[in-house]
Amino acid sequence: MGLVNRVVPKAELETCTETLLQQIAANAPLTLRAAKAALIDALRLPADRDPAWVERLVAACYESEDYAEGLRAFLEKRAPVFRGR
Image 1 (cartoon, rainbow, N blue to C red):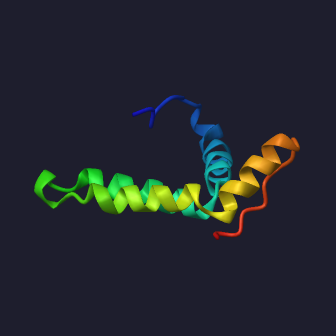
Image 2: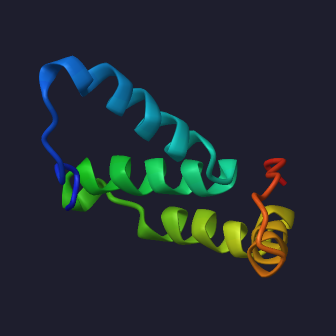
């Protein structure tokens, strides 16, 4: 899953963790929501999973203003400003 891809000395753990958290939090809110939902759904029993729900959340990401902003920011070589819309 790529959840553990680095080992750091104990003295660097807090700084490294904070940096990673900031990188994750800088992503589009709708994308974070969809990713969290996908993880939660994957942990459910197979009979209780709702892939259509996750697919709707992912589709909403692609249809969002934030997606358009991300594309513009990439093309303009700047950091995106996400608004959760």
